[in-house]
Amino acid sequence: QQKLMPKDVEALVEEIYGKAGRSMAHFLSCGDDDFSFAVGSLARFRVNTYRQRGSLASVIRIVHFEIPDWRDMGIPESVIRLADLKSGMVLVTGTAGSGKSTIVKYLMENEDLNLHFSISATSREPRGTEKNGVEYFFMTPDEFKSHIDAGDFIEYEEVYKDKFYGTLKSQVDSQLKAGENVIFDVDVKGAMSIKQMYGNRALSLFIQPPSIEELRSRLEGRGTDSQEVIEQRLAKAEFELSFAEKFDEVVVNDNLEIAEVEAESLIEDFLNE
Ligand code: ADP
Ligand code: 5GP
Image 1 (cartoon, rainbow, N blue to C red):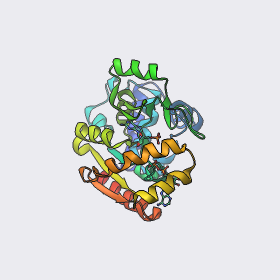
Image 2: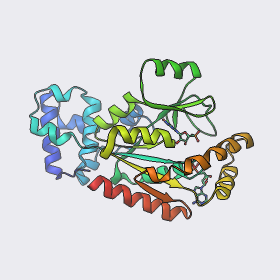
Image 3: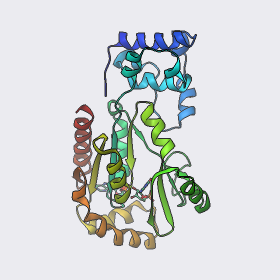
Image 4: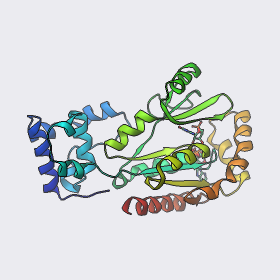
């Protein structure tokens, strides 16, 4: 992620806000609550971090939210280039129960990585405490089909029988435009499609369980799926494991802390390239 000196960031805000006829005070008054409400509860936003960390991405998130057409206001090219961060994409894939969502959650707590979750659409039912617009956009099979027909997905897969999952183009585009690094939790085929589309802009991580037996015991231990669903997922897992070497990196999730730190440092290296 590009780091700027606080004074550069301040100058950038003044330039854009001045052109829009607003003041710096107005910018500073954009409260946490308004913004979190606007972008969903997964967004962790601190209006003042830009001062301490010179994080251009957090500034751009506010500016973009408040003044969506700021790029067309006669801002000098050099300033726009400064703001158009090369945002990266991190694809986390692997079999069901390999630990993808646990690891993604850990990675998103590291604010320096500026990772924001790509919320997929799915036609499966919410489970446990899942909420619409947080873990997924939950859709009926008909709604999902109409998005397919409209060409709204970058990719979609029938990951399990009659259960569709897909990445919405609009979602990813707006995240990348806002300078966020986007993290995906997608199945093996979906990760391969996205990687093929975005090439070096995306890092693909395959999370590998130590063994199928361990996978079974984790899925049973998670307690969120019926025995039938677990059998379905295990049957698929052996097939998916054979794709491991197609990805940029394989992270073996035996000891969770080690796997988390390994994934974190791979992502740091990728984003700093
Ligand atoms: P996925 O998102 O890949 O389906 P989860 O992150 O939900 O997998 O993990 C499946 C279950 O295994 C969860 O209950 C999680 O707490 C547990 N788990 C994840 N990693 C480990 C690990 N290294 N050791 C033991 N249990 C783990
Ligand atoms: P779950 O039902 O456990 O949330 O997810 C099942 C599988 O669907 C996981 O392997 C998950 O990575 C995958 N998945 C989630 N969202 C997407 C998506 O947008 N596209 C694809 N191809 N797979 C997805």
